[in-house]
Image (cartoon, rainbow, N blue to C red; front, side, top):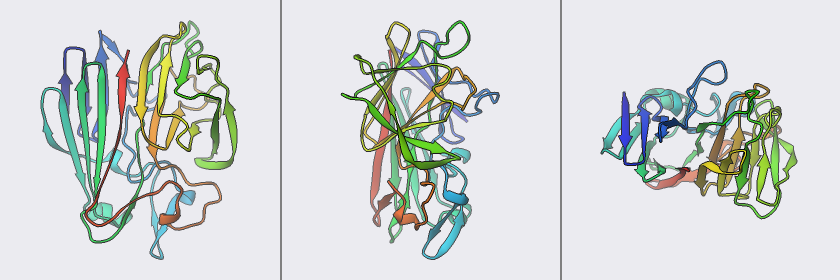
Amino acid sequence: MQITLKNDTMTATFDSHGAELKSIIKDDREYMWNGDPAFWNRTSPVLFPFVGALRDGKYRYKEKEYTMGQHGFARDMEFEEAGHTSTSASFRLKSNEETLKKYPFNFELTIMYSLNKNNLEVMWLVKNPSDETMYFSIGAHPAFMVKTASDGTIKGNYLQFDAKEDLTATDFADGLVQRSTHILKLDEDRCFPLDEHTFDNGVHILEHDQVQSVSILDINKKPYVTVEFDSPLVGIWAPEKKNAPFLCIEPWYGRADACDFDGELSERRYERYLGAGTVFRGGYKIILN
Protein backbone atom coordinates (compact mmCIF):
# COMPACT_ATOMS: atom_id res chain seq x y z
CA MET A 1 0.00 0.00 0.00
CA GLN A 2 1.25 3.47 -0.85
CA ILE A 3 0.30 6.75 0.79
CA THR A 4 0.95 10.16 -0.78
CA LEU A 5 1.21 13.37 1.24
CA LYS A 6 1.08 16.84 -0.24
CA ASN A 7 1.36 20.44 0.83
CA ASP A 8 1.81 23.69 -1.09
CA THR A 9 5.52 23.02 -1.63
CA MET A 10 6.09 19.32 -2.21
CA THR A 11 4.65 15.83 -2.57
CA ALA A 12 5.96 12.71 -0.82
CA THR A 13 5.02 9.06 -1.31
CA PHE A 14 5.54 6.19 1.13
CA ASP A 15 5.14 2.43 0.90
CA SER A 16 3.82 0.36 3.79
CA HIS A 17 6.40 -2.31 2.89
CA GLY A 18 9.25 -1.23 5.12
CA ALA A 19 7.42 2.07 5.80
CA GLU A 20 9.79 3.32 3.13
CA LEU A 21 9.96 6.83 1.71
CA LYS A 22 9.80 6.34 -2.07
CA SER A 23 9.52 9.80 -3.57
CA ILE A 24 9.80 13.52 -2.82
CA ILE A 25 8.88 15.91 -5.60
CA LYS A 26 9.32 19.68 -5.43
CA ASP A 27 8.91 22.02 -8.40
CA ASP A 28 8.43 18.99 -10.68
CA ARG A 29 11.80 17.60 -9.65
CA GLU A 30 12.26 14.15 -8.09
CA TYR A 31 14.80 14.19 -5.28
CA MET A 32 14.80 10.49 -4.32
CA TRP A 33 16.65 7.68 -6.03
CA ASN A 34 14.38 5.44 -8.14
CA GLY A 35 15.61 2.07 -6.91
CA ASP A 36 17.14 0.96 -10.19
CA PRO A 37 18.71 -2.44 -9.34
CA ALA A 38 21.58 -1.76 -11.73
CA PHE A 39 22.96 0.37 -8.89
CA TRP A 40 20.84 -0.23 -5.76
CA ASN A 41 17.28 -1.56 -5.54
CA ARG A 42 16.14 0.47 -2.53
CA THR A 43 15.24 4.10 -1.94
CA SER A 44 15.13 4.88 1.79
CA PRO A 45 14.98 1.79 4.01
CA VAL A 46 14.75 2.01 7.80
CA LEU A 47 17.53 0.08 9.55
CA PHE A 48 16.17 -1.79 12.59
CA PRO A 49 16.92 -3.50 14.95
CA PHE A 50 20.50 -3.38 13.65
CA VAL A 51 22.49 -0.83 11.67
CA GLY A 52 25.07 -2.43 9.41
CA ALA A 53 26.40 -5.96 9.57
CA LEU A 54 27.33 -8.26 12.43
CA ARG A 55 30.67 -9.98 12.57
CA ASP A 56 30.14 -13.41 10.96
CA GLY A 57 26.44 -12.47 10.66
CA LYS A 58 25.78 -13.47 14.28
CA TYR A 59 25.32 -11.99 17.74
CA ARG A 60 25.12 -13.36 21.29
CA TYR A 61 22.55 -12.58 23.95
CA LYS A 62 22.21 -14.40 27.27
CA GLU A 63 24.56 -17.16 26.11
CA LYS A 64 22.48 -17.88 23.01
CA GLU A 65 23.61 -17.18 19.44
CA TYR A 66 21.36 -15.60 16.81
CA THR A 67 21.78 -15.02 13.08
CA MET A 68 20.87 -11.65 11.55
CA GLY A 69 21.31 -10.11 8.10
CA GLN A 70 22.68 -6.67 7.42
CA HIS A 71 20.56 -3.78 8.72
CA GLY A 72 18.03 -6.04 10.48
CA PHE A 73 14.58 -7.02 9.22
CA ALA A 74 12.25 -4.00 9.42
CA ARG A 75 13.05 -2.82 5.89
CA ASP A 76 11.67 -6.09 4.49
CA MET A 77 8.47 -6.26 6.56
CA GLU A 78 4.96 -4.96 6.04
CA PHE A 79 3.99 -2.16 8.42
CA GLU A 80 0.42 -1.35 9.37
CA GLU A 81 -0.89 2.12 8.76
CA ALA A 82 -1.27 3.92 12.07
CA GLY A 83 -3.13 6.95 10.71
CA HIS A 84 -2.57 9.76 8.26
CA THR A 85 -3.73 13.21 7.21
CA SER A 86 -3.03 15.13 4.00
CA THR A 87 0.43 16.10 5.32
CA SER A 88 1.35 13.35 7.81
CA ALA A 89 1.42 9.56 8.01
CA SER A 90 2.37 6.95 10.59
CA PHE A 91 3.32 3.28 10.19
CA ARG A 92 3.74 0.66 12.91
CA LEU A 93 5.56 -2.64 13.20
CA LYS A 94 5.26 -4.97 16.20
CA SER A 95 7.24 -8.02 17.23
CA ASN A 96 5.72 -11.39 16.36
CA GLU A 97 6.59 -15.08 16.44
CA GLU A 98 8.91 -14.78 13.45
CA THR A 99 10.84 -11.74 14.72
CA LEU A 100 11.26 -13.32 18.16
CA LYS A 101 13.09 -16.28 16.62
CA LYS A 102 15.93 -14.02 15.45
CA TYR A 103 15.56 -11.05 17.79
CA PRO A 104 14.40 -12.06 21.31
CA PHE A 105 12.71 -8.79 22.28
CA ASN A 106 9.16 -7.56 22.15
CA PHE A 107 8.97 -4.13 20.51
CA GLU A 108 6.74 -1.57 18.84
CA LEU A 109 8.33 0.55 16.12
CA THR A 110 6.37 3.56 14.88
CA ILE A 111 7.63 5.68 11.98
CA MET A 112 6.00 9.08 11.51
CA TYR A 113 6.39 11.35 8.48
CA SER A 114 5.27 14.97 8.36
CA LEU A 115 5.48 17.66 5.65
CA ASN A 116 6.12 21.23 6.74
CA LYS A 117 6.78 23.74 3.94
CA ASN A 118 9.95 22.46 2.23
CA ASN A 119 10.80 19.98 5.02
CA LEU A 120 10.03 16.32 5.55
CA GLU A 121 10.34 15.43 9.22
CA VAL A 122 10.90 11.78 10.12
CA MET A 123 10.38 10.53 13.67
CA TRP A 124 11.00 7.05 15.06
CA LEU A 125 9.39 5.80 18.26
CA VAL A 126 10.74 2.52 19.62
CA LYS A 127 8.74 1.17 22.55
CA ASN A 128 9.73 -1.65 24.87
CA PRO A 129 6.44 -3.19 26.07
CA SER A 130 8.16 -5.98 28.00
CA ASP A 131 9.48 -6.32 31.55
CA GLU A 132 13.15 -6.65 30.59
CA THR A 133 15.76 -4.41 29.01
CA MET A 134 15.70 -4.24 25.22
CA TYR A 135 18.76 -3.66 23.03
CA PHE A 136 18.60 -2.23 19.50
CA SER A 137 20.03 0.10 16.88
CA ILE A 138 18.13 2.21 14.37
CA GLY A 139 19.14 4.28 11.38
CA ALA A 140 18.12 5.88 8.10
CA HIS A 141 19.35 5.19 4.56
CA PRO A 142 17.75 7.81 2.24
CA ALA A 143 19.22 7.98 -1.27
CA PHE A 144 19.16 11.34 -3.07
CA MET A 145 19.55 11.96 -6.77
CA VAL A 146 22.71 13.94 -7.49
CA LYS A 147 23.11 16.42 -10.34
CA THR A 148 25.53 14.63 -12.66
CA ALA A 149 28.31 16.06 -14.81
CA SER A 150 28.43 15.68 -18.58
CA ASP A 151 30.31 12.39 -18.16
CA GLY A 152 27.51 11.00 -15.97
CA THR A 153 29.48 11.16 -12.72
CA ILE A 154 28.82 13.14 -9.54
CA LYS A 155 31.95 15.23 -10.13
CA GLY A 156 31.37 18.93 -9.48
CA ASN A 157 29.01 18.44 -6.54
CA TYR A 158 29.98 19.08 -2.94
CA LEU A 159 29.05 17.90 0.51
CA GLN A 160 28.80 20.68 3.08
CA PHE A 161 29.00 19.96 6.81
CA ASP A 162 28.20 22.00 9.90
CA ALA A 163 31.79 21.43 11.08
CA LYS A 164 34.51 23.92 11.95
CA GLU A 165 37.42 21.69 10.99
CA ASP A 166 38.34 18.69 8.85
CA LEU A 167 36.44 15.50 9.60
CA THR A 168 37.76 12.13 10.72
CA ALA A 169 36.01 9.23 9.00
CA THR A 170 36.22 5.65 10.22
CA ASP A 171 37.47 3.14 7.68
CA PHE A 172 35.14 0.37 6.55
CA ALA A 173 35.92 -2.91 4.77
CA ASP A 174 34.15 -6.23 4.16
CA GLY A 175 31.02 -4.90 5.85
CA LEU A 176 32.75 -4.15 9.16
CA VAL A 177 34.23 -1.11 10.89
CA GLN A 178 38.02 -0.98 10.90
CA ARG A 179 40.37 0.41 13.54
CA SER A 180 41.87 2.95 11.12
CA THR A 181 40.57 6.33 9.93
CA HIS A 182 40.93 8.80 7.07
CA ILE A 183 40.46 12.56 6.83
CA LEU A 184 37.79 14.42 4.86
CA LYS A 185 39.51 17.73 4.22
CA LEU A 186 37.06 20.63 4.03
CA ASP A 187 37.57 23.89 2.16
CA GLU A 188 36.90 27.40 3.48
CA ASP A 189 33.15 26.90 2.93
CA ARG A 190 33.15 23.67 4.98
CA CYS A 191 32.70 21.73 1.76
CA PHE A 192 34.13 18.44 0.55
CA PRO A 193 34.29 18.03 -3.26
CA LEU A 194 32.78 14.91 -4.80
CA ASP A 195 34.14 13.02 -7.80
CA GLU A 196 33.95 9.62 -9.46
CA HIS A 197 36.34 8.14 -6.87
CA THR A 198 34.73 9.44 -3.67
CA PHE A 199 33.09 6.10 -2.93
CA ASP A 200 35.69 3.71 -4.29
CA ASN A 201 36.22 2.39 -0.75
CA GLY A 202 32.58 2.47 0.29
CA VAL A 203 30.91 4.37 3.10
CA HIS A 204 32.46 7.30 4.99
CA ILE A 205 31.45 6.93 8.64
CA LEU A 206 31.50 10.06 10.81
CA GLU A 207 31.35 9.17 14.49
CA HIS A 208 31.38 10.98 17.84
CA ASP A 209 28.79 13.69 17.03
CA GLN A 210 31.13 15.42 14.59
CA VAL A 211 28.25 16.82 12.53
CA GLN A 212 24.47 17.25 12.77
CA SER A 213 23.84 18.59 9.25
CA VAL A 214 24.96 17.48 5.79
CA SER A 215 24.01 19.21 2.52
CA ILE A 216 24.50 18.32 -1.13
CA LEU A 217 25.63 21.35 -3.18
CA ASP A 218 25.79 21.81 -6.93
CA ILE A 219 28.77 23.04 -8.95
CA ASN A 220 27.98 26.62 -7.88
CA LYS A 221 27.89 25.54 -4.24
CA LYS A 222 24.15 26.05 -4.06
CA PRO A 223 22.54 23.51 -1.69
CA TYR A 224 19.65 21.43 -2.98
CA VAL A 225 19.26 18.76 -0.26
CA THR A 226 20.05 19.05 3.46
CA VAL A 227 19.68 16.36 6.12
CA GLU A 228 19.61 17.46 9.77
CA PHE A 229 19.81 15.01 12.69
CA ASP A 230 20.95 14.55 16.29
CA SER A 231 22.31 11.03 15.99
CA PRO A 232 25.92 10.35 17.08
CA LEU A 233 26.90 8.94 13.68
CA VAL A 234 26.18 9.57 10.03
CA GLY A 235 27.20 7.49 7.05
CA ILE A 236 27.79 8.93 3.57
CA TRP A 237 27.50 6.19 0.95
CA ALA A 238 27.06 5.34 -2.71
CA PRO A 239 27.69 1.95 -4.37
CA GLU A 240 31.39 1.21 -4.49
CA LYS A 241 33.15 1.98 -7.80
CA LYS A 242 29.85 2.26 -9.74
CA ASN A 243 29.76 6.04 -10.35
CA ALA A 244 26.12 5.98 -9.26
CA PRO A 245 23.99 9.12 -9.85
CA PHE A 246 22.88 9.23 -6.21
CA LEU A 247 24.28 9.20 -2.70
CA CYS A 248 22.94 8.41 0.74
CA ILE A 249 23.11 10.56 3.86
CA GLU A 250 22.42 8.16 6.72
CA PRO A 251 21.83 9.30 10.32
CA TRP A 252 22.54 6.32 12.61
CA TYR A 253 21.93 5.43 16.22
CA GLY A 254 24.24 2.43 15.98
CA ARG A 255 26.68 0.95 13.49
CA ALA A 256 28.19 -2.26 12.11
CA ASP A 257 30.43 -4.40 14.30
CA ALA A 258 34.12 -3.67 14.47
CA CYS A 259 36.28 -6.16 12.59
CA ASP A 260 37.61 -7.61 15.85
CA PHE A 261 34.46 -7.36 18.00
CA ASP A 262 33.83 -10.47 20.07
CA GLY A 263 31.42 -9.31 22.73
CA GLU A 264 27.75 -9.79 23.58
CA LEU A 265 24.86 -7.75 22.18
CA SER A 266 24.87 -5.28 25.08
CA GLU A 267 28.59 -4.58 24.49
CA ARG A 268 28.25 -3.46 20.85
CA ARG A 269 29.48 0.07 20.21
CA TYR A 270 26.63 2.63 20.19
CA GLU A 271 24.04 -0.04 21.05
CA ARG A 272 20.87 1.54 22.45
CA TYR A 273 18.88 0.10 25.34
CA LEU A 274 15.38 0.63 26.70
CA GLY A 275 14.14 -0.22 30.15
CA ALA A 276 10.81 -1.92 30.69
CA GLY A 277 7.92 0.14 29.31
CA THR A 278 10.09 3.01 28.06
CA VAL A 279 10.26 4.71 24.65
CA PHE A 280 13.14 5.90 22.47
CA ARG A 281 12.58 8.92 20.22
CA GLY A 282 14.83 9.78 17.32
CA GLY A 283 14.69 10.86 13.71
CA TYR A 284 15.91 13.36 11.17
CA LYS A 285 14.75 16.06 8.78
CA ILE A 286 15.09 16.37 4.99
CA ILE A 287 15.13 19.94 3.68
CA LEU A 288 14.75 20.65 -0.04
CA ASN A 289 16.25 23.89 -1.31
